[in-house]
Length: 159
Ligand SMILES: [Zn+2]
Image 1 (cartoon, rainbow, N blue to C red):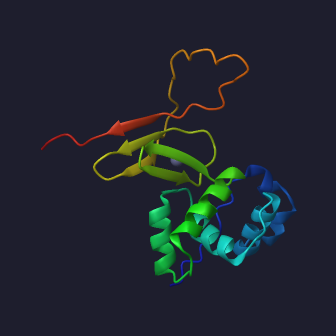
Image 2: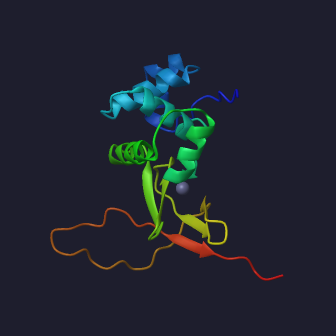
């Protein structure tokens, strides 16, 4: 099992700072990212962060990350996977997408973008284009709109 692809460092700022010199050691990049986010780089966070971030942009549920962890022989419980995903989300390393009531997806791409969702396959895909979101309602007093998430649901045509 040797899929040690370099960490996909998406943060443009990070690419311009001194950490550039250490590219090629994705684990220490990951430790840096965790520390900068205010999370102690524990072994579990590093293992799960490795599974999450080493494969480029992706959308993953807690259950599927848990399965990956089992396959990679990372000793974690499903509860730990949930907690870690929520901690990563709180500090901005992940973005949580509630696609339907029962299932949350976590997106490693935290930049603003929208999604297609293929209902038959439970598959979430980045939308490759901008979406013109019509006129938005005014936010209630004392509030502002933080973000607009568009999920366009797809189904296959018969035949
Ligand atoms: Zn996405």
